[in-house]
Length: 337
Image 1 (cartoon, one colour):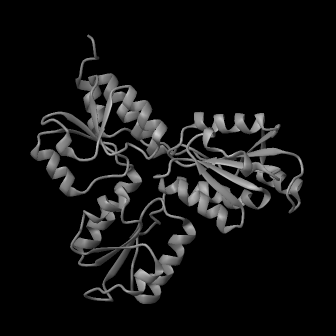
Image 2: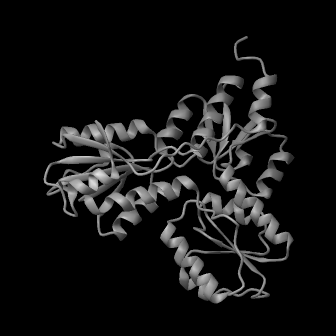
Image 3: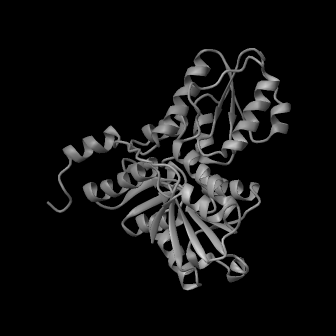
């Protein structure tokens, strides 16, 4: 595999689809800092305390990761009432509401919080705006765990909107006292349209000082936008319930480049490759690199002999472990000693 630059790819293609069967492997792709941190937390907890370790919801939205951690002793539950009283439980990277935290306290659970720091940032913003007397508009997908957790910080003043039509139908006590927040894994274009609609409806609306969409979501979408025009097909490695992975497919399709979301290489349909010379491959922020490697190997076996890694931008973000896990490591004797 060779590493190339976006400029070189653009020069080679000169605005046309290349005739040589090749793979463009986008970078950055795959695990973000929040996902790495969450997975590390579960693995360290298992190594420090031993199995079982309970995890509320999927630690990250990827079936391969969840299955792998389950094999190591993690027990994934939907709600805390499935966790034995006094047991140790980890919150997923998507965050939880105050109601969940209170339930854990009532059951005497030992909590380790793996919420992504960028999600925590949105929670803090929600609390701040609510205390200042603002009506909150949360742009996101209602059934997503992150949105449920954020809305739970100020449920009485928060409304969730997913479409421009829902923005038009919003009713608030004071149109001059409105603030907005967004889910961290939205499409950049989707968020922009929604925020524009909110500003048109509420000219005095305020938002966060820095956008809520996380750096990894933005970077992976930017990479797709920069390369999709030179590809016949974009394959996105990620699970169906991964919001940011689904957004990558949408970004590609919005640029008129066919795209599919695949959990593994086994999901690739041979007919997708008919007449396809250039395949761009990327991965959602919760998809491990081993699955990307399998996809590339499959494509090579199908005749795509040239593999160029296209780095659109560097990405070197790292997050530290939460105090709960740091303190636990320091105070707990190793398993088996």
